[in-house]
Image (tube, rainbow, N blue to C red; front, side, top):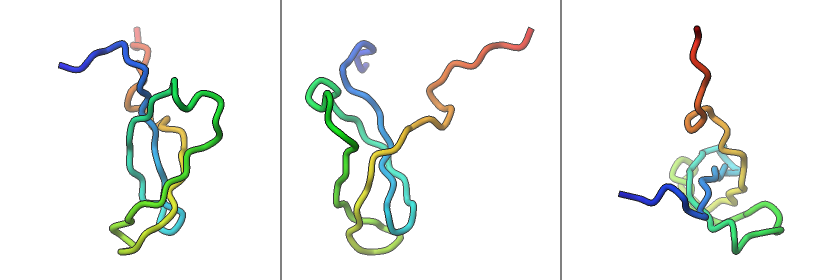
Length: 69
């Protein structure tokens, strides 16, 4: 079982060519104060390498929603 209290944060990376989205984790202690993360990764939709840029992961998957009373 994974630890719940870790220093790793889930981020989304979006391709500049096709808007293909992947998710990965980063260590927030090592990236403290740096700008947005950009990586060159293989885009399976475009079938070539593309620049992926960090975005907010806010898709409502990890957020606890209030119950309706």
